[in-house]
Length: 181
Image (cartoon, rainbow, N blue to C red; front, side, top):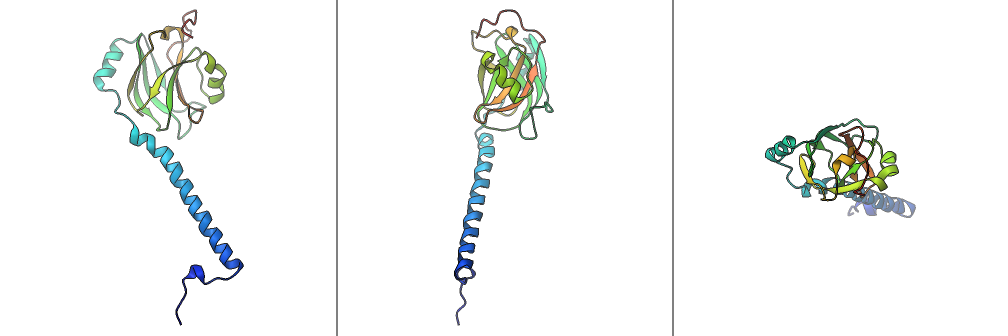
């Protein structure tokens, strides 16, 4: 007598159970693959970071410096930045590492924030200065109408998931008059 495949050797409710197990396992596999894609795709599409020469030029023209810390209250094991911040009159430079993720934006803010809630509370007063396409060293040119002296901190924010990544303070008190908003 020929043996039947185990998947088809059940009858009635046993067969239905087996089918539901197959459906659930395939859905779970699909969800894991989707989540992995969200994490890996930004890494695959990341551009090359700023060169040592670009970072040196920024350091030589620095008006302010600061530090992104990995252990801020709003950061976590998957959302963090760690490294040196340099602010010039015309650019923001970073030397260090950033956890990979999609749709990262760089903001100047008038007060230091260290959580999602605190950033959302002042986001209307923040100015977005650019997109981050790398997860390490970068130099982002400031828009012509933005004066970094009128802000105190830089925030890395994931726009797609409304997630705080990290922040760095480069001065305690902004210059008066937030005219670039």
